[in-house]
Image (cartoon, rainbow, N blue to C red):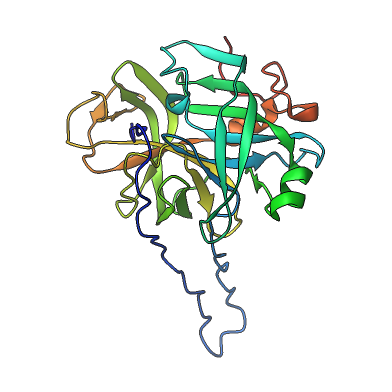
Length: 281
């Protein structure tokens, strides 16, 4: 895993890769212009005590709903959930530093509970906040990041935005791992980055943002650090036939589209809703 960090470190220098829009060839009126990448900023990301995260909403979330913060299951203050363990509606008073577009902290948000958390099949946590979306926007001028509802596509240009380090990583989705096994945990249909995204400890929980739509398609969580096979901090890929592949230096994320149907009225997590793909307790 992109290990959660203990205590506070000095923030690293902000790094960002700009993407120039494609230019259509002259005298070819039928050629379609490539989608123009949006400038991904830190607005809506948060820094946890040991990880990164983001304020997120589903397309159906209302302005008056309590806001949600997305991070990793292995970033929970309660420790790593064991295989098969799912946390739902656990009280929490955790705080998060909200960042603006340039990466400056503009305020502190507070959780009321861990709405959901697990490291089974996926590696994610959702905190419910004491503030609503409209209260956050009114106080800080920052809007939540929207969750994509469709499965991501290989070749998509993405940015991993770490609120902890105030640093971005730009690359493409290289493909998907049928199963990603790391130590005691196994995750399904994980996003694999191209080598340019060299994420580090503290980037755990960062939103993975589609450069064109600006929507969150995954949550950053791990990478193979030293070429070991299926050990802690060295995940391996296992295909449909049980064949194992080790990709040293390659990093991964967990998809988030399958959790969108689990977010019901009032932003309450309902694991029985149609289409919800999250494991139950």
